Length: 245
Image (cartoon, rainbow, N blue to C red):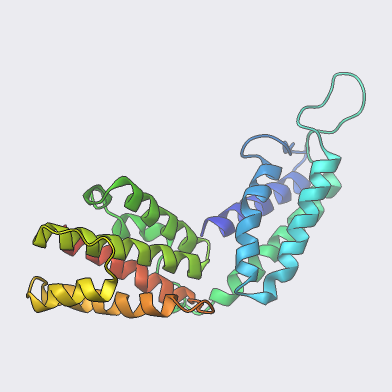
């Protein structure tokens, strides 16, 4: 999970800076540096809080650190006058302690090994070379976006985007085998025609039936997908890409 990797890196760097002599300097502002990493990850933290109220304090703590670092430090220390560009020893110690707690709080809901199916170390297996070349650019971007949300533990937007890819695949397949456009037709009518015309393999009927049901659930405005459900939807869509192309 990229979010945990980022926060762990902050913890380790700040801890080293606070413990090692001579003092190890950490630049605060600049592309991909301490402050920008926290700013980049903050929206994902906000999204997580919507699913896991127990980490609400993490959002508040990171927001406070962003405000403090932005006010306290400059991007480059001036040759003359005041301005601090590298993290001070006391701030390194405090940030190290808090970052450690952030990581522990974020990963605690996932201590059950059955909760998360997709892990970053398995991405080469999940999306092998050449798989995404079978679909168009817009669908490829959707697949990558859905996977990014999964890795950041934001299951509902991940599921919604995955289902959008599934609908694209169904319409693409319909046009391919019938020579007709699926524009203006809903998922059920397209799938029904394909089934009645015996234009689908049995394996595809199973995948599409499952995804159609999830798509119907997603139409309810209060529907929220959990992490495991979202990952299963993504893996079904990945199987569709393999079967339909």
